[in-house]
Length: 154
Image 1 (tube, rainbow, N blue to C red):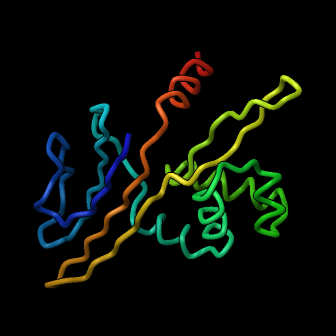
Image 2: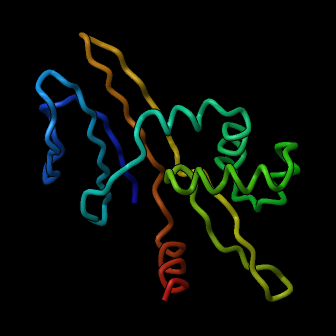
């Protein structure tokens, strides 16, 4: 499953999305996501949230490291040279913004651990013809991991 989030100015609304009342002349941005599983339109983090996250050096190092391979919080702490508590705070914010996915990795001792994988594939910000437009593209999710996650929630 992959998703694309686009920001648009007032007057343009995602298909099927309701449009909140806006004062005349005031510009609003609407965000939505579509996935290959036809999930309904959902609220997404606003541009300020995404930019705030990406402005953090440690967030960028977490996203870069997890784009190469799934890593646990301990592995991220070592790889990014950041304290475990800082890793957990940033991982929580990234997963809430749907920019980082968590997965379960079985260990040889029969237990399992949570690992993280970057969900963000691309972020683009365009300023053109008096309009500000942004796009957040997410990587596809592994179907087996999604089924495991859903089963764990039951």
